[in-house]
Image 1 (cartoon, rainbow, N blue to C red):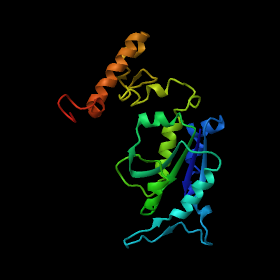
Image 2: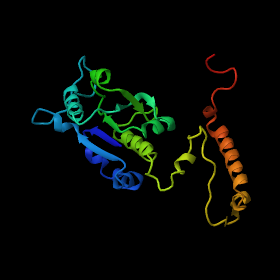
Image 3: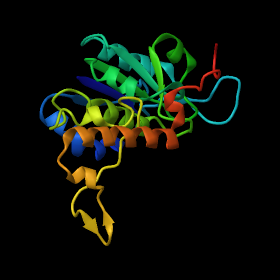
Image 4: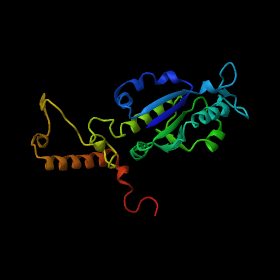
Length: 232
């Protein structure tokens, strides 16, 4: 897998991608992340990538020319499975989406800034818009980090324990059950006896029951609408 990230602040990615799961994926040669500076595709000596919006108004808008030139250059290598603009307007990133993208070969992420990007990029170049939540960030860089982390950890071979990702929250539309480790008794707070029993079948039943209880209490919408609710 290769993910190309287009940004005007490449230095923001120096720390997060040099540690943990993403670094492990890169070291194994399983996933590659390439940071591309959009300013390298500006034509003026100031490497300008933004301008005032037509019609007036506050803020600046990222220009179509440097972004288009950048993407056209990268597409000379091969086509992308998806060209994604990270935007609060987009489809909400969830576990199902992360699972799907973990099977793709080449993805481009465009990080917006200022008041956004020229609408013509969204209409004619972008293939999908993705949001990590109903809030506004200063730019798409943080969202790109979240996207990469959520997707790359699911690529086969990245995690040492292949079954670990299968038990994550949301994989079965359920939150994860409680987990414990040593010591078994800490200041009178004890690990549930069932987890110390060694009975694998009963432990799995307990975990499923706890996952159901936790999901119902904390995220009931994951179960879908109640009978008679929602669209007919």
